Length: 88
Picture 1 (cartoon, rainbow, N blue to C red):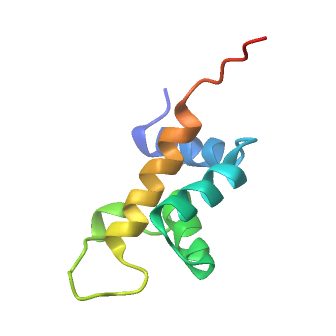
Picture 2 (cartoon, rainbow, N blue to C red; picture 1 turned 90 degrees about the horizontal axis):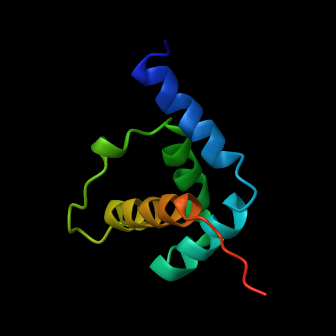
């Protein structure tokens, strides 16, 4: 049986290999208002290289704000977890 860490790592890999990953990330960045250069940090968070628990908004006006990065990550995960339905 796979451990929790192995399962979490495979979930992250599946997320980044999702066919709508690029579109979901771009859409979430646009909605949150993050600049293009924040993409590198977002990809590190989504891959698990940066622990989400270590990111907290310090209310000092950082750019990009850790709070905004976390909002964006949440939006990406939510968008990719939804099932798509096609109506004709």
